[in-house]
Length: 592
Ligand SMILES: *[C@@H]1O[C@H](CO)[C@@H](O)[C@H](O)[C@H]1NC(C)=O
Ligand SMILES: *[C@@H]1O[C@H](CO)[C@@H](O)[C@H](O)[C@H]1NC(C)=O
Ligand SMILES: *[C@@H]1O[C@H](CO)[C@@H](O)[C@H](O)[C@H]1NC(C)=O
Ligand SMILES: *[C@@H]1O[C@H](CO)[C@@H](O)[C@H](O)[C@H]1NC(C)=O
Ligand SMILES: *[C@@H]1O[C@H](CO)[C@@H](O)[C@H](O)[C@H]1NC(C)=O
Ligand SMILES: [Zn+2]
Ligand SMILES: [Zn+2]
Image 1 (cartoon, rainbow, N blue to C red):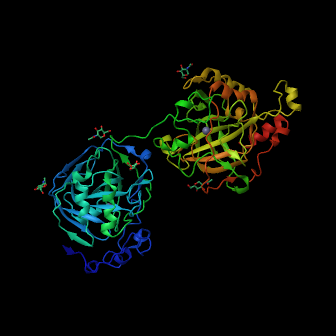
Image 2: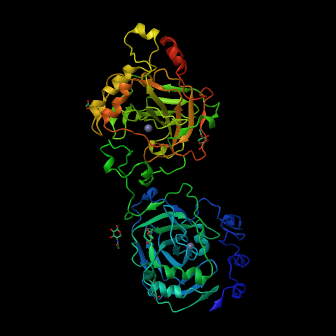
Image 3: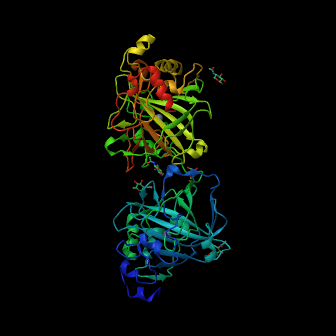
């Protein structure tokens, strides 16, 4: 037995006191150089953008077939542990030099294992000591096997982004697991003081790993989790935890004399986490709206809106989600929200097909023709499709957005993609998509355009119910899910929108309102409503045989909603409504 430093030999027992020793950093929030100050230490990389540990969101991990099985040399040898050391930050088992090897597993060559060590929490406090977290869950402990690329020295390895490979194992506690096996041997040798000991430890690494399935793991590029936090580590985090009896886990804090030795999780900052092929993927669906007993799919569907976040690649638990309730009292006027330019919204042949997706009725547009720009968007967007959200025939409002908690019978979404991006990139870019949302309400006048003289003298519906009739006529042909019909009758988007004021709108940053809920959408919600005959609106729930197709409102999480100078107050009557149709049409064209 020998002492690693004179200071530690006098048996100082608290972390705060260690901080004045040779290592000028600590974990404890009450000491000076705690994790939030590690970035300020001389020569530290702890403030970098590829730091570890991280929270692994299992449903965002990308499957990578190059993550083959590992090959291990001497993992089953019980002769390779040289010494066991308590250094005041961890308990570390040093391995005999150049005897334990790791390769395969998608690593960049062969690596020599140098040591393994542990991170733990507080005595008696479950869920508290692992460094990585799995879908936000912190496990009791984590074991790190630190390896270095063969052929490099430490300084060279620190400069190589994959100079080191750390194999991380979660450790979960059991109430009645083995208390006499390899973990008993290891933990009974945890030194009480800051010392290095060389006990006879005839246990192997495989003895400690036990029956963890080594084919299931996550991989990402990161850093050491202690200063200097060099960004030189290819991390492997095994999915299955090692199970260790609770009594043995408690020996780490109680014998070592310190607790909570883990760094908080760091920002992923755009890094991708990969999963080995054997790692089970999260479910891809089916998803549904669910709170509808008339929905024939309701009973088979587990993934209702509160569970959408669990789906593969879902962002539905993000903080910039849609739809929202727009509170007019908190709206900020933005003078940069100018008029839109709509290109080919008047094209009678732009709609190619109408599809029953099982979640909505979607009208797809000819590629690369219809466009939207202006409106404070800052980019030209290609219009891809529009679709609808509806309630039911008994009057439950079906809009997704609400204004001052008022919902509308229906909502139409015109989905546009930034013209300079592919769709795959657009859904990953904060303003990759622009969706135009229009509330739809029943026509107040029960008169349809029966005679032209009537239309001149009576208030006429704000939109062209002829266009809506043509559209809804198709619904009977797409009653079964996934059916598609070609559209030949001329219907333009302008006809459907009618004379609704397109200069008065609300603007906020949000998401798609269906899985995967990507936070890629600049939302425009128009203040005025499109007016459609109620009979035509009712055809959506009655013909589609599913109703209440709308996501519940999401939290704002501090986002600001903006409006154009003209969109003050709550939605009111359409002013153009009172004008002769020809003048209204003229004014309307001026907005384009
Ligand atoms: C495995 O470990 C044994 C015992 O320490 C050692 O003699 C042997 O050289 C090691 N094997 C390799 C391939 O390093
Ligand atoms: C850890 O063990 C607890 C209790 O046995 C169990 O509920 C939990 O699911 C386990 N966690 C993991 C990630 O295996
Ligand atoms: C590990 O898990 C994979 C996927 O479930 C399975 O195919 C494989 O047989 C398991 N390996 C072991 C050693 O249990
Ligand atoms: C719809 O149009 C496509 C191509 O324009 C054509 O191949 C298809 O046969 C049409 N379907 C029907 C039912 O007319
Ligand atoms: C949306 O987010 C971007 C930055 O990501 C910001 O510049 C813009 O002002 C935001 N727009 C709104 C309407 O909040
Ligand atoms: Zn570690
Ligand atoms: Zn929508």
